[in-house]
Amino acid sequence: MQITRISRRSAVTASAIAIAVSALVPVSAMAADASAAPAPASASAKLKDATPSDVLASTPWKTTGAVDQDGNRVALDDPAVSNFVGWAYFDADGTYTMYNLDDSPKLHGDWTVTPDGSERWINAKDANGKVLFERTVPITQLDKNVFTYRVFPNAGDTSVYYDIVHTKTNHVEPGTDGRGPGANGNQGGNGEYHFNNGNAR
Image 1 (cartoon, rainbow, N blue to C red):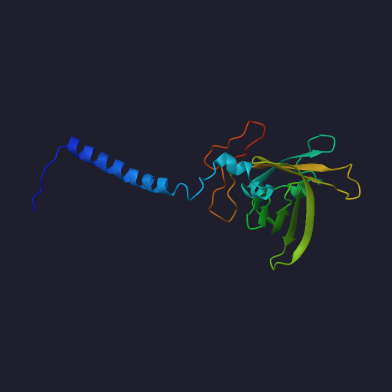
Image 2: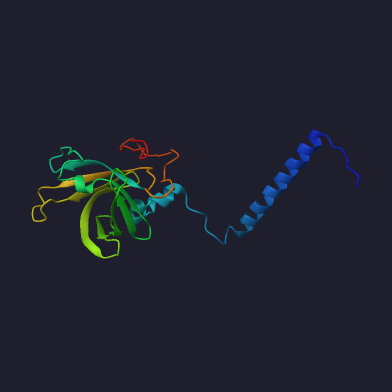
């Protein structure tokens, strides 16, 4: 076998030509099939077309605030709202897991959101899958950055309530090594919400 020496410039030129040719082949193949398959939707179009359930399942959530019926902030350790505070992970398969802010287990079960996004229903299950309770709450805000629902201390008196505010987080679900959406920055938004870095306490 005889080895022929070539200059660095020739090698670079040959490599560039080979890369260019290989890049053209897939593009040509895709162009031929362009009429057969629709173009993928852009990220903004996917968000725009997302159902309320898609939005809720799109990110982990952290309870970051509570507000009463008069617009007054309520401390998250106040007994009226403390049971609703923690990390929430709603999976697209209709199951969820919630944790206290110290990452200890809190609840798990099933969830749904009405197609119009006006209500969220959950049940809570014990370790054997037995339903412990069910709860339906009105949703007052649900978008890619904020999820807020309303609770009534007395179901018979809707004039007294608390809005429980959750914000998008990148907190890793306890017991997993996964990373939540937004873990690498690029949170988007228009500054009207507080993105919380869930792993920095």
